Image 1 (cartoon, rainbow, N blue to C red):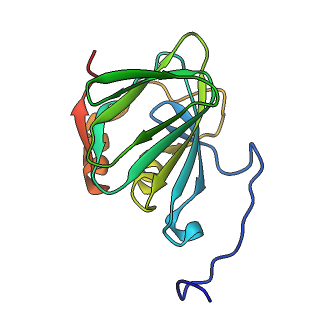
Image 2 (tube, one colour):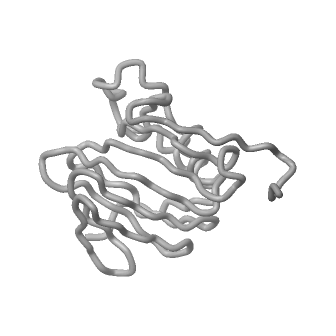
Amino acid sequence: MPTSSKEVQPCALARGEGTPLWFLGALTFVRATADTTRGAYGLVEQVIPAGFASPFHVHHAEDESFYIIEGELTFFCQGRKSKAGPGGYIFGPREIPHGFRVEGTAPARILLLTTPAGGFENFVLEMSDLAADINLPPAGPPDMENLMALAAKHNIEILGPLPE
């Protein structure tokens, strides 16, 4: 028996399928949303350039899990730095400030799983631009006023740069 009245169809996406987006300079594919998972989770795949650092931030509505496919990331959470490379997994519980930086000279490819769905992946969709050319990220930094407003709309609080 379905858990909701909304019919959900199984779906499959191969690597490289889906709509490519630019989210904060990272090539991004939103793989699953609240609509496709009955609200269970959101799944986002990203190819993030070397040296990229996320803002230090807090998710108030969802937990965030990171699975590293390629590259190396340093995570900042609860006053600690943790490094993770291919096959590494990091769990970022809601209400705990965290962030990450891509280390080395190569980009990182990661999967971000957020539970429950509806917040983070919608923030990504609203903040992103269509990637007409997946080899040319948009020029310049993001519009910080828009970033802050959209983050707040989706219960994400931007605290500032990563602590060192």
